[in-house]
Length: 84
Length: 146
Image (cartoon, rainbow over all chains, first blue to last red; front, side, top):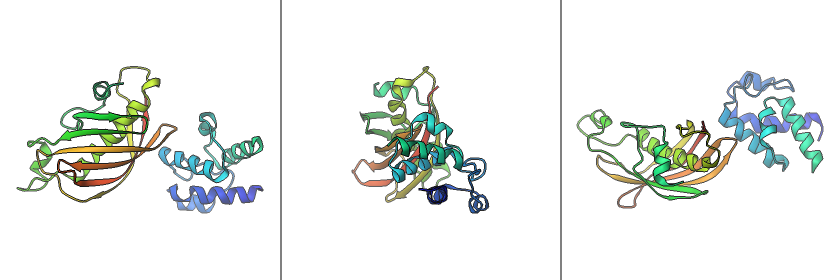
């Protein structure tokens, strides 16, 4: 999966939880889940659980705490996929 | 952890404590009961001359027994103090079927959907003393042990 496909997949995952439509339309690697998309902490957990299901990976507490932006999520997903 | 120990650390008190007893406690779910007091303050206004337990109070009862009591049990091993945990309701989706009048006893049955990264999501049902389903739905919250 290339970066473009990865971003598209993440976009599909976060869509139900975002509060800022404009930031969602402009979603890029730099987009921050909390500050830009205004996802609350409870829904951030849902994003992580959906990422686990979509990519069939397990996110631990340390990774979860870092997963605050599209870029960080992409790096963690790639690392976990490579470990499989 | 016993029912009495769980109730003792609940971060609520009268007139906003809606847990009397817990009758079943496990990793997967919890069952508890509450009897609505005839003279509870909200019956004066809901409704005028026709007291009915408000849906928000039924939802609160489901959340206190089904999510907060269960959350306290699930985090029993990483408690740092005897203080009440910090809890926050993050979502609720409840359907209501029959009314609950002053003095009625209700039973809340909650099943854990998941508990991860401090978020607890539960499938919760509330029954009256005739075993009729009063309301049911999903409740989620965050819990942080102090």
